[in-house]
Structures are given as structure tokens and as C-alpha cells.
Image (tube, rainbow, N blue to C red; front, side, top):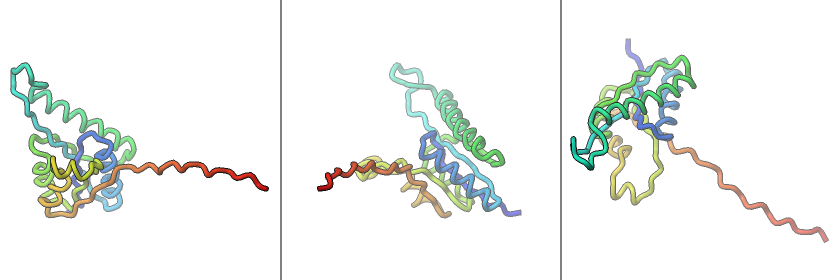
Length: 156
């Protein structure tokens, strides 16, 4: 039995939560499944005064954020079947590996500008280059600009 499988990058942001909800709706419409993946890394120095956390703390934090996101998605879509996994490694590599045999990779957009992409790179851009399956990027929510009320001209 071949099941349509969607991999979703989840990092606890609003963008990734939107991507997860979109993926759940898409999987339901295709009779498929969702695999929510959180990539985590630890870049501190164990035992050092400047270290923020320990690797087990970082893993636990990633797992808690993933659990919150998946819980919110299953609350919104009670029948959803979502497998969740926190994997150590660089996000683009982890997601590309997880999506190797997936039908679709879904990512949320954080909406950063050109400078961010030029200086720091983008997980989304790296995934698009490294993944063989189609990639869907869910844009950040846009709010409509508030129009200034037109000046009322007295009728003469």
C-alpha cells in the first residue's frame, strides 16, 4: 500500500505552525500522512560558564516545541495522523534526508528580507536545492494595510 507522505519542517514559529496545518489538510484530502520534523543543534560548550544549555536540554526544548505544534494541529484537525520526530542536525540536511522518499516537503516562510538570505542563508532555499520531491512554502500571514479614511468634502 503506497501512502502519500508529507514531511513538514516544524520549529515552533507561526510560519511552521501554518505549514503544519496546511500539510494536515493536504494529507487528509489525499488520504496521506504527515511527518513533522524538528531539527535541533547544540552549539554550546558543555560545562562552560557561557553555555546556555546542555545537549539534553536542547533536545528536550525542541521536543517540547514540536509537541506543542503537533498538539495544536491535532486539536484543529482531530482525525489527523501526525508522526513527530526531533532530529539532531542542521535543519536543511535533516529535512532533505527525511523527505528523501516523501511525496512533498512543506515549509513555513519566515518572511526575512534579502539581506537575511544573503548573509545567513535560508533553510527553505537550501531545502529547495537539496530535496528531490516538490517543496511547498507556506507564506507568512499578511495583514491588509489599513487605508486612511478619505477626507470628506462638504457639499456646496
